Structures are given as C-alpha cells and as structure tokens.
Image (cartoon, rainbow, N blue to C red; front, side, top):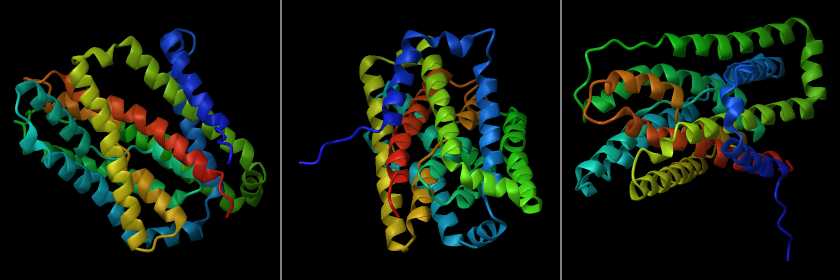
Length: 325
C-alpha cells in the first residue's frame, strides 16, 4: 500500500489559516501594511514572469482562440447558468437573498493575480492565463451589470473603476512588459530566472501564503461568517465548494474533448473557475448600494469562494506542479 505523502506547502496553508485565526493582528498592523507587501509581491511575480516568457510563446498563445473562448464562456456563461438553474428551488425571502448573492458571484469576472500565480505553480500555460485573466476583467465591466440587471433594479450611480484599472496596469501589465523588454535586450535576465526557477517558485508560494493569511484574518476579524445564520452559512460554504468543483470538472471535460494539452487544460480549469473579490467589492457598492439586500450578505459568497478557491487550487497546483513530464 502506497504511503500518502502530504506536501509541505499544503501544511503551510493550514498553518497560515491557523495563524490568521489566533494572530490576525499582522493584517491590521500600523507598522507593516500587509496589503502593500502583497501588492509589491504580486508586482514582482509578474515582473519575473515577463523575464521568463518568450515572445514566440505569447504570439502562439494569442492565436489559441479555442482556449480563450472556453475560459471566457466558463466565466461569464457557465457560472451564471448553473446558478440560474437553481432559481426555481428558492421559496423564501432569506434564501432569495442568498441566491442573489450567488448570482452576483457567478456574474463576476476572473481574478488576475492568483489565477496566473496558480497556473505558474502548476506549470500550466502562463501567457494564455495572463491574457485571459486580464481580458476577463475588461469584459466583466460590461457583462456583470447586464447579468445582474435581469434580477435587480440597477442603481443610477456611476461605476468607480479607477482602482481596478490602476491595479491592472501597475501590478500586472507594466511589470510583465518591463520583464519582457529586459529579457529581450539582455538575455542574462532570462537565463537567470530559468537557472534559479526553484527560488522564484518559492517566492510565488510565499505570496500565496500571505494572501491566504490576509484573507482569512480579515474574515475572522470582520466576522463575515456571522452575516447569516448557521444554516444559511452552511449553504454558502457547501454551495461555493460545489460550484467550484462542478465548473472545474466541466472545463476539464471540455478541454479533453477539444484535445488541449496539459498546460492549456490547467489554464482553462484554473482561470475558468476563478472569481474576483476586487471586482465584487467595487460592483456591489453600485449595484446594491441602495438595495434591500445588505451588502454584507451579497459579498459573503464571493468572500468565502475567494478564500476557498485560493486554498483548493493551491493544493491542486502544487500536486500538478510536482509531476514528471
């Protein structure tokens, strides 16, 4: 009988969650701004990606239109349709609020940073992941309000999307572009990142651990898990896990039918199952700012899903990244 071996990174994920519960102070420290540390870490990760990527890989992956279509359809069509399918089974006002919160989760675009980090960790198609995660945020600005407009009365307020665009440019596009330019004109940087790939991989994992700690710490301190009763909370958690694995398996099946290779399949499953908490926070203030449903309940599924997706995909990515090709 083969002995089950638990990866050290998985253990560190549990440690990060435990520390966030017993010692959440670091997330609110006046001396260390953890959000800034994480933002700098993400910026460096994308800069290192730029150093490792090749222009030929990027040009090839931009032509891989089937992969891009599958990811975007998963994000903006599969997710919402799965939630809409459960609408006839909602019979009470409180469950209606939870369903609406899940519909909001389903309509959101994919997150950028963690999608690409996880794809890299699993040794998937990083250029395709960067392209789809970025374009997803732009598509979501149009598609998310359209989906939600079918079920709620939209606010007349303006969207304040400045923070999203700033993060998109400063944390992702500029670092990747700078890395590409450096490795194009100075090949030493490209060779350096390949030679010390293990160190850069460790840096990626460290940033992921900080993101997990920060997400859980703020969730515990802000008591988001007490926004609904125990039964409602259980529905949100089980629903979040269920919708993740349903979409993960469907995108895996479609990838197999379309004969995608393993790196492309990883990109499809990881990008196609992610949802952006950043977009959720911004959109919720506009779509539900004056609504009858409290924003806390609306944000609860995406906050739980955001945490679970990082945790679950980290484990999957570590396992896939350890494979022998």
